[in-house]
Amino acid sequence: MLALPSATAVSGMNAAQAGLRTSAHNIANLGTEGFRRQQVVATEGANGGVTTTVTRAEDPGAALETDMVGLLQSKNAFLANLSVFRTSDRMMGSLLDIAA
Image 1 (tube, helix red, strand yellow):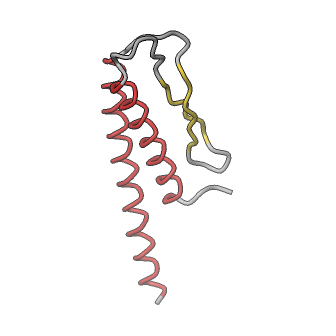
Image 2: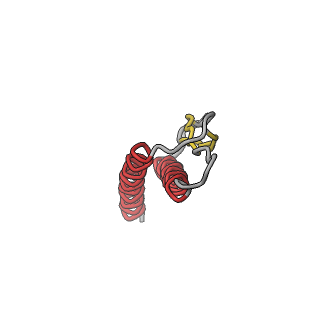
């Protein structure tokens, strides 16, 4: 059974938030000696959508460029999924108006 578009969009927004938190965490700890960056691993959900797991990098060290790009990607992914969610909500409202 496939997930509704709104449920898929919510899982995408949650994944984007995990990316934002992880990138922010990495940037906040740039100066911490021996710090190992966190990374988000996204996997396809069984019924649609996405699930995430946060892992640690094998080697210590900063990657500011990667984390800044990650922030931008996560922000844009969140906004795209929010747009899908809003569209799904409007469509469901229109269907309910027709049925009434």
